[in-house]
Length: 250
Image 1 (cartoon, helix red, strand yellow):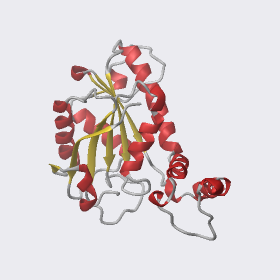
Image 2 (cartoon, rainbow, N blue to C red; image 1 turned 90 degrees about the vertical axis):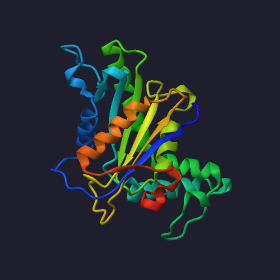
Image 3 (tube, rainbow, N blue to C red; image 1 turned 60 degrees about the horizontal axis):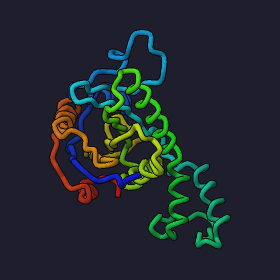
């Protein structure tokens, strides 16, 4: 797995009210407004295999959207699993926990931090593997073996932070796995969130390349413009390392 590189970030500011929908539906609406076609409309008649969500035929891009609808970082089962892992790895530097406490990944030895992140992010890695199968099957059914496979991961600004999400997907791709996914479009947005987030009006969109095969710049611009039209949030370019200044997860 080559490094997942940062690229093409933008943020959309302001709060908007949309008709009731979930975050998956929101992203499908945005992608179709950018010129994409829902996969059901372009697959061969009678096709019954796994399928992705959207095709940008002009740009040869197959897209699968995955959403994080639960906050696993606050799931008691996850904390139990972390506690067990810590207890089993004290000799490798894992902390000894008494009662309830808050521990940051940066406070842990690297090997323990990796194990902890994989426990917290197991769902993310499962979603990446499933998206890979859906994209791969859709490419084959459409006769587009060389199409760019894009995984769109949508999350509200809570729980696992953006950098950890990218690391988790990169980790799921290690050793050449998930080879049908060529890039990631990470969307952190309060719009249609299943959580009560209070006043967190901004959305944060960034593209990440897997192996240097870059996502078409013109299509990135089209998706950004479509986001503004669908959500009512005007967009602006920003450095991803500055996202936290505007309210993104660290």
